[in-house]
Length: 94
Image 1 (tube, one colour):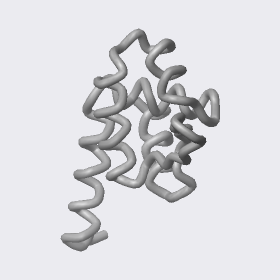
Image 2: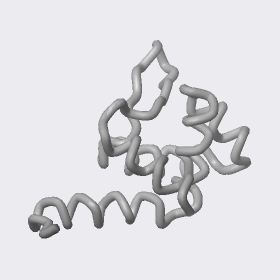
Image 3: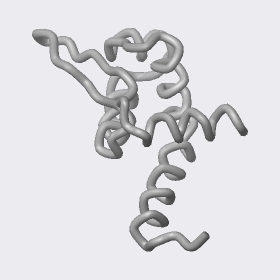
Image 4: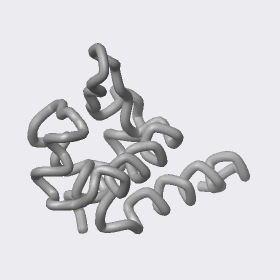
């Protein structure tokens, strides 16, 4: 099966997402909890707020995570796009 350049680029970007342990931990947490506020993620992973926010921004940029603002709080969840499903499947198979 021959892949197009676009498919290869998309796969490489998704592989980069799971190449970072913090991003993997965030994805697994969101998968377990279904959704979480930044502060909850920070507390659960024992990381700084800036480190978590940086990784969340990258996950949002790749379309793997989405967010909604509730006043000053930001609630994150996994995207319903195929990207999230593929990443979770890949993580389970590792």
